[in-house]
Image 1 (cartoon, rainbow, N blue to C red):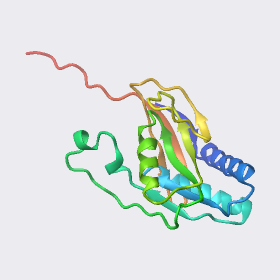
Image 2 (cartoon, one colour; image 1 turned 180 degrees about the vertical axis):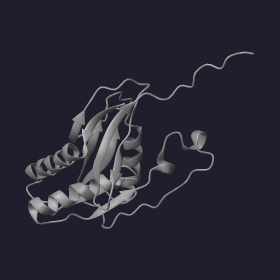
Image 3 (cartoon, rainbow, N blue to C red; image 1 turned 90 degrees about the vertical axis):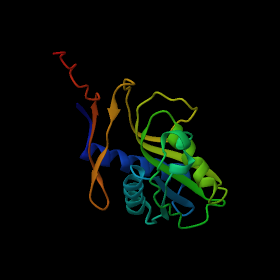
Image 4 (tube, one colour; image 1 turned 180 degrees about the horizontal axis):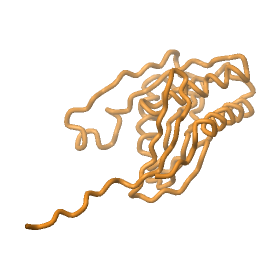
Length: 185
C-alpha cells in the first residue's frame, strides 16, 4: 500500500480545482455541483466550500445514485441497494460540475450522465475527479483532476474521508489480498 495523496495535498488540490472552475466560468452563479453517490458527494461539498470561499457564492449541491443506470445492473445486482438522489434545482441551461472520487473505466460516469439527463438538459456537464487512474473503457476524460496516476488493473485506489466537509485522509494504492494456496493433506 502506498499513499497517493495525504489530506493536506488532497484539500489543496480541491481548492485548485475550485479555482480552475472559476477561471473557466468567471463566477459560480450558474453552476450546480452534483456528487456521484457515495465517493463524489463529500468531494462535491468540499469543492463547494472552496467555491464559496473564493467567489462568495455556494452553488446548489446535489447527488445522484447511479445504481439503476449501471450497464451491469441486471446481471451483477440481483438485489440492488438503491440510494436517494437529490438534485435541488432544475439542470436546464445550467453548468453541471459532476464530481467523483476515482475515474477508472468511465462506466460510472456514463451511468451518472444518464441519471443527470432525467433532471433536465444542462447547458454543459464538466467532470471533476480526485484521482484519474487510467484504464478507460469509454472515451471519457475529466475536465478537472487533482492527481493522475497509472495503476495496474489488479490494484485499487481507495479514498477515505471524514467529517461533514470532508478532507481526504489518504488515497492508498493496494493490491487485492490473495490468500495463500491451501495445502493438500
